[in-house]
Length: 241
Image 1: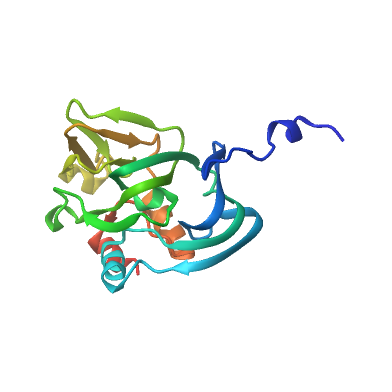
Image 2: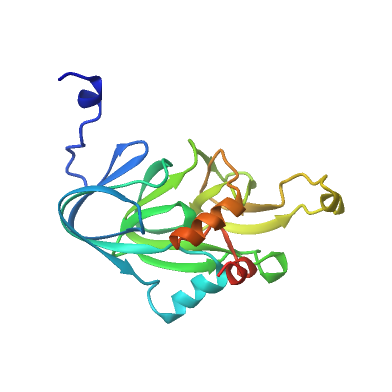
């Protein structure tokens, strides 16, 4: 039997713990434990056990419930190769060196279990502006993130703004502000559609995907899988659960 399918799509043979099998799939060489989005395993070779992982204590669980932000995760333990994917979204690898990223919970695919993960209020995103929250991942090791389409990495040398539904993640040292462009015309169907933007200042980067994900669709998917939507809001978290 012959086909380019077999020669062009063989499994990766790299010894790296985290590696891209292709643009849509992550391969983790498992030798212990890794943390991944619940339901993201598509295949594995060898021995692997999958267990529900809590948010990390009552305080963090309450934060996730109240904010609508965070990610439902599982711990994967064993020896072998495990393949992860999320609805055909593009997968990207980031290696943290003791620093941190602020990431839209919807974009988390997998990360080293040694990482510290928590939910934080976005600066400038207080309750009066909707209560925007994001997931902070800090430490040393790999983080696999997903995007809906090929993203752009914006350097923040100049003031930078992005739609809150299009932001994937950013370097956590950046200062942020939240702006709303709501106008009365929006009440009669003539709004711009750009309701909330996040502004970034400082030395760092922002990753933006070419898609403003529909929040209604995301929340419906989250209700079915247990995974919350992206940049969370306090009221959205309360009403959606």
